[in-house]
Length: 559
Ligand SMILES: [Fe+2]
Image (cartoon, rainbow, N blue to C red):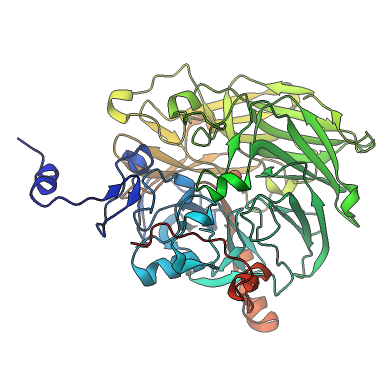
């Protein structure tokens, strides 16, 4: 007997996608891996009070674990759309007094507002304005779906292809696009700023920061915002080509900008093709710029063998002024959906075969431009990603780090779970640099972890003394848990498992924020600073479009 869905399709057929482009008003997502199984959009906004818990949530945890997931609100314009093109949907797990509560809200970006008004997707392919519906010409395209962090009383939802959006930390209400009160006007801003715990500064940057931020420019801008919210540094640099600079590192005096050999060609954009193409013949590059008083000529590039740079672990300086930079590196193109020019896209299976090593680099700021460098240490026992440290040690010599890792020695129930969406991160790892210690916790044959975050133990200043919080994906049940571990004893298993009654989507990044910090900033804003001020003016590139100087959006999807 035919399945009931198949009957509906037979009795009342719709041409949902024709030649890969949305061709009906039907609310139905493409039948592709991107929208299948665990990766089916969640689209949930709501609250659940007092979540069910197994074990005991430590009573000294008082704060919120924020994380964000790309979560397509409408079926995409293009059938081949990718996960990274989903609307930012922010989850808050509020933990206090041994209890946990859930809240989730979309980031109300300009993109979200326009698509809501029209009741359908209007933006086309990832970072390709030429594939958009002309109704959104000049509208900021970012989905703000990559990271969510706390800054001066607000949450900032960010994605590297556009500006940040501010949200209210307790309600997750969107305040609006945030330009740091008119001080940050680049079209793009990283999803991975760094916060210096010694100075209270935020160091952030934009790459492909010329024009509208989606036109293949080689411009890089690096900003410092001080703890009072005042921009103290802004310097513009040029990259050798337009490549992805997804994450960065900061030491006391330097910013490291790893540039991955995924390249943007403006002509390919105009032809409606992918924004990025992997270049297997290009080196990996590392830009080094001074934190203070930088000038455009100050950027120095270091090069190494072709590889895919993942996320930063951390960065600091040695007593003799060298810069130690730790990050994960894959030996091939992790983003298999952006293959090299004229080759077909790869697959999840292939991605899971890549080796993601944790590497340590030592960069000499006195070395000449274009110097060749190699890692001084490589840890290959597990393929790992989404590294986290005790953030209180950013810019300082540190010992502990945590990762989601792939333990290939453990069984995986393919029959029950299918392809592991997002990668087979079936294990959490805790590692130390001193003595190369390792401990792991395996989630079982039907589960994977999302990125962990570190929670410092109240009153303790010792590195790594605290908890680790991470989302667990039950790939068979299509449901999530939130696990809390003692950060230095993860092999013992979670001390508490908070059960969500439904499935979220694969998220990207998140951070734990202590309640006392949220409360202190709330009071400061009420008594002294006033409310967070969203951007009052369009970005410079938008003015050009509004005045008809430039038209980047195309005519696709105008059905
Ligand atoms: Fe990231």
